[in-house]
Image (cartoon, rainbow, N blue to C red; front, side, top):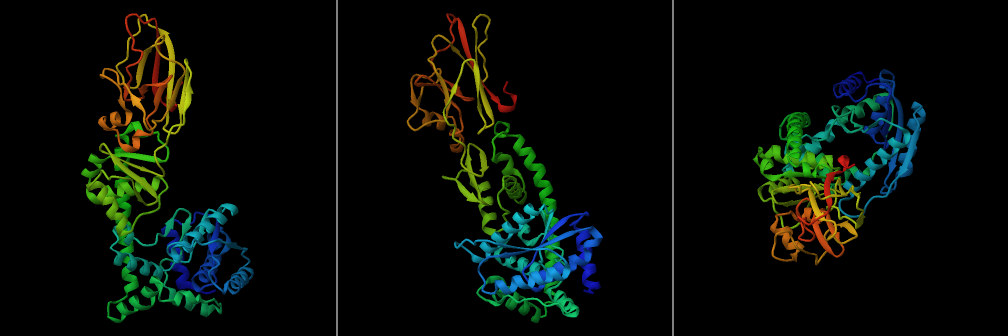
Length: 464
């Protein structure tokens, strides 16, 4: 296929974005359509320059009646080029947008095939026209700067070598080379929003004399991406500072806790980007939609919602001047025995509780909330560590009597999400320590004490 102009643009795109370094195995998304056909042919032409090993993958969503025709077209092209072809069948969720569900299923399938084949890259056939459509749709949704960055040239191991090439140029080169492709009739369905933008809105803008709208929207995406990269850099530094301000929560798995005050003091756009970055580090999906931006922005203005907020696939909770972003609820600690001497590990919260028995002579009762001491003779056994339970009562040391543990935690301004992850030490039938917060009234060390049981809450990595 002779396509010097297009080939040069694709080569330049690959180099500019560092899509390949040399020797990669590349999964090429192939549907039989014009864009993916051109992608496979152009990458085949360029493969010797980067020593690429190509493998075409057709994803069958089970949504189209012409699947057999499409598969045959992809396999015929693969045979002509000497490129192996795989066909992967996926199930598409029936809830919500069918297009979004099919896209998600397609990328999962491509990622799965890449892993199976040991591929370092996945190439898709997104073009400059796809970029323009995406930016325009997001602009109409009121997306923030991140949304206007459009389709990323590189995201993870997914690369888009055709992102600077017009769809018409690709088709012209295929015609010149005598290569056929298949048409997807669903691309003409004006009930689909992208198709309305493609076939109605963009042509109308062009006819209105607005110049090369596709090129202009591509420039918007480029400017927005540059701004987003600068914002991400600043957000990464801010996130490290904010997370370091809450060291007590640093070891919790699948969660990040941030102080609301310093976060809200940042410029609002930067603060929202910090929340986005925190969510992404926890495995949440990218959040560029306008409503997601509004949710994140509102968390900074009203940081104490009555209940958890779901956004970006994550759970966000507020309390006591902190925000907790997590993939699931705060962990509940299953009951486990605490031997004396001995140690119990609490990997759910990245902590351990150590117990030892020492002679009272010369012992100094600690004034640290993470270390408590009891009269060994007066302390009931066995000891156990668990989370709080409904109906728990607690006699705090120095208080006049017992009260509901829930009320004690509320008065102590412990966030709702933090209450279930606080280790509670029970001796016999009584709570003797809310670890790291307050010891109970039972078994205090007195001048008559001969042996002391000392309990200490430690970071799990520091426990010995």
